[in-house]
Length: 355
Image (tube, rainbow, N blue to C red; front, side):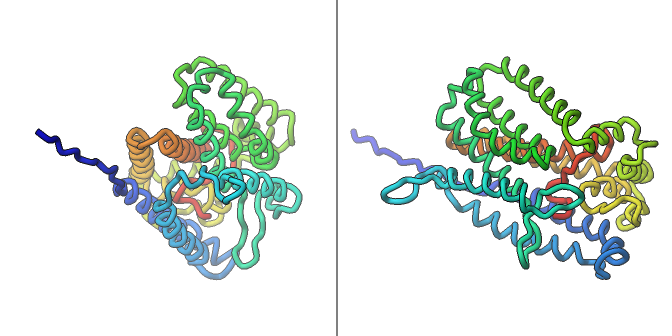
């Protein structure tokens, strides 16, 4: 008897749960950006209550289009060589580009509130190279792990990954310690997931904490002031923003004052539509609204974990783990800053903060 061979082709599909949660978070962000920025935009800046909302809406539309296009691209294209004679990987070009942009911003970047983190682009506004660097690091670490996963079982394999990430990490840390912490966290978590032996990660974590502490206390004075403001938020002049944010959280209660009814956004919290937007969510929507937002982020991370577990190859799985680590770290840091759990640092809430 003959046996008919059946060919099974891998099927690709969208995770619609992930897609919908992302779009819902973006919509919540648009509503809250309008609510928190309208007074500031009219009274202190541009005379148009919807100024920041319009810019955020345009970015959301463009971002959605780019998201759909990127989702159709085979992610192996980023690590395949291009060119007939000399094979150049797109990842390598991105790596060199990010190093170049980070060097450029240190010397010629737009200085805002004493920090050079932005490049001014005519007609388009400002661009923060460190955001592109995050994506590059996710691709880079995922590729190194994919190329030799067993090396991560030893400390030398982890050091090898760190040596590739170190130039980008050092350049970002020079002006933006908070983003450097996120990049280091992405690197650490991706390697931790792959490695079968975990012991040396605890030593590496302690060393990293020590380096950050030295950088804070031996570096520029304003970083040490943030520690002091965190410890004495009620009396320190630099603790004003966080203290006002705590007032907003406390006054929101269980159900909140109602959408658009915040008092703290009326000039008390500086630029409340940026890093401190979660405090206004707590004030207007209460503890209930805050829990809903946090739950949506948890579901987002859960869907990413399922995607990583079902990825067809290690490279794809590590890309998802890198993105998941990025969002998890950034959400935790933002909410921790707003609630004064950790010292103040400039971290936005993904999908929700302006910009």
